[in-house]
Amino acid sequence: MRKKKNVIPGRINRQVERFLHGRGLVLHQVRVLVRNQIYLCVLGTIFFAIFFSVPMLTGFLTGAALGTFNFYFLAKLIQELVHMRKGAVTPLLFSFYIRLGLTGLVLFLAIVYWGASIYALLIGLSIVLLNVLIFGATLVGQKFKEA
Image (cartoon, rainbow, N blue to C red; front, side, top):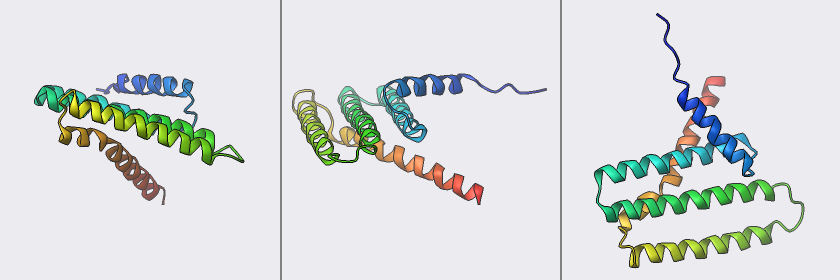
């Protein structure tokens, strides 16, 4: 008996990548990174919603959303700046300080007014690192298979 492949994950991946490509992420590996970041954010939110209290969920969701948005905008900006010959430093610094200020403001609001857990905020922010580590591990695995 022949097994059928599950086509739903592939279809979802294609739709998400098509959406990201339409938003200016033209490099495939950058789209994969951002797509996986979105998946980690959603899966982590579901996990925290099931197993933890509201302050923990608020903290994780805030941290994960901040990390994901910062990652997305940085990936989009870097793709544009690579092709600039002069003056790339100014937009990069301007974008960095704007994102840093907004991130600080949201973190302040989350801790002081929304009662978010600081530990959950840190876990949410660290999924960006987890995403990059997973992506790097898959690249290393691919290089060894080719050799």
